[in-house]
Each structure stands twice: as structure tokens, then as C-alpha cells.
Image (cartoon, rainbow, N blue to C red):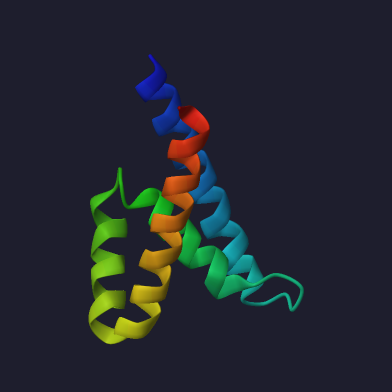
Length: 84
């Protein structure tokens, strides 16, 4: 049950970030690219197409992918500490 709830939360947050990121590409207040990357990172655990997008990102922009991967690892460690 807890796994299903966490999966739903990841999907909702991922899609929300992705939609806000697309809107942010046109609205100067939101950071569109950052939100799109965050949404893809959240969705990549449950979605094959998001993993493919991140793979294309890694191949085309290796420095940006490395920075995103470090941020994801840092945030993951924060969530693991709060659980235990």
C-alpha cells in the first residue's frame, strides 16, 4: 500500500513539474528548464519514455546531466535520513 501511494505521489509531482516547466518556458517568472528536468527525474522511475528523455539529455549535455544526478542523489539522501 505504501509503495502504491509513493508511486502516485511521484507521478503527480512529476507531471505537475513537467506541466509547470512547459508553462515556465513562456512565462518569465517560472524556471521552465529546471522544472522540466525535475519532472523528468521524478517520472523516470516509473516511465520508460522519461528514462529515454534523460538518456538523450545525458548524451547531448553530459555536464548538465551530471549536475542533475548529483542533485538527485543529494535529495535522495535527505529523504532517506528523514525516514529513519
